[in-house]
Figure 1 (tube, one colour):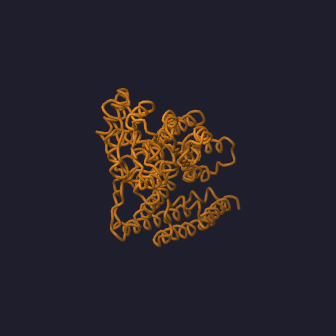
Figure 2 (cartoon, rainbow, N blue to C red; figure 1 turned 60 degrees about the vertical axis):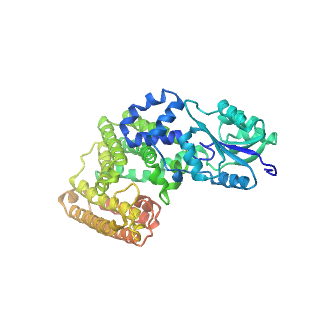
Figure 3 (cartoon, one colour; figure 1 turned 90 degrees about the horizontal axis):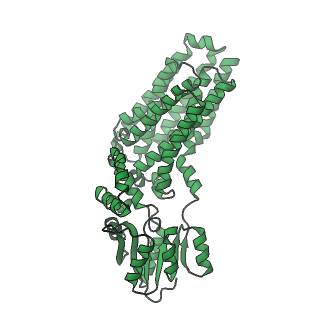
Length: 477
C-alpha cells in the first residue's frame, strides 16, 4: 500500500481486528456467569442490537489482553501508523468494549462504535465514516458481506478472511490494499472442535459386549455401534459447551488457546450451533435405534457432563470423581445397549481404573506448575498438589489391578472361559501400562489427555491388542 501521503484507515473490529465476535463473547459470558440468565436472554435480544449490546456491556467485562487478535493485521497497521496514517477503530461493538480494546492496543487515533441506541453497522457505519473523513479518501478493513458498501466507497480495501467473491471483485478493480486469509475452512475447524479423536473413549461401550460374549450377533453388534455414535455426537456437543464456557481459561493455557473456539478459527455462532445440534442429533439417533433405557443413560451422561463443565471441574477431588463417573457411565451404557446386566467386578474395576486416569489427567495439567507453585486457572489445584495426585493415581491403578486379579481367580471366570489362566496376562499388561504411563507423566513426556496419548502411542496400542488377544484366547483356546 502506498502511504507516502497521510491517509485514514478505518478498521472493523469483530472478525477483522479480532478473530471473534464481541457480541457473542458477551452472550457466552452473560450466560456462563449465571446460567439461569439463558431464560432472560431472549427478552434482552428482543430490545434490539444496540440496547442488547449496552445491557451486555454493563453486565460482563472481558479482558482485552486475552482476546484472539489478527496479528498480521495489527503489524500492518503499526507500519502504516509509523508512516503517518491516521487509524480509526470503526465497529458495531459497544463503545465501552471498543474503548478498552483501543487502549490495550494503543494504535488508534479515534473510535466509532455503537452507542445510545445506534447500532453502527453497514450503511450507518459508512455514513459516520464519511462524516469523519470529510470527503477525504480512506481505506477500510473489514471481513463480511455487511462491509460491502464501505469497501466500495473506500479508495482501497483491506480484506480479512472475507468472502472470496468480494476479494476477486476488488482485485479486478485493483482496489485491494491487503488481503489476509488466516482461518482454515469452516468444516475443518468444526470437525477439529468436535474432537473426533476423543471418540476413542467411547470404545468403552464395547466392553460389556466383549465381557458378556455376545459379540458376533448382528443385533447386538449394531446396537453397540449405534450407541457408540450417539455417545460420540453427545460428547462432541459437550466439548462445544465446555469450550464456550471456558473461553478465558483456555486462552490463558499454553496449548488449549489453539482450540478452534478459543483461537477464533471457528466463529462462536458455529460454536453455539454445535452445542445445540450435536446433542439433539445424538438423542434423535438414540430414540430411533436404541431403547428408552439407553436414552435415559445418555441423558444422565449429558447432564453430568454439563454440571461438571459449569461447576464441578473447579472443585478439587470432586472433579476427579466426576470424570471417573463419566467414564463409568459409558460402560453402563454399553451394557444397557445390549441388554446385559453389568457385573459388580466390572463396576469395581472401572471405578478404580477411571479414578486413576482422572488423576493422571489432572496431574499432567498441573505438573508444569510445580516450579512456581502457581494455581491452575479455572481449576481447584496448584503445582503443590502434583505429588499428592501422583500417589493417589498410582494407588487407584494398583487397586484396579487387584480387582482384576480377584476377578480372574473367581468362579465366574471359570464358568465363562475355557482357559481362564490366560487372563492372568491381563494383570501383567495392566501393571506394565499403568506404571509406564505414570512414569512418563512424571518425567514430563506426556502433555495431553492420557486417553489420547494411549491412542497415539504405539506401545499402548500394542498393549491393547495383546489384551484383546488374551481375552479371545482364554475364551476359545
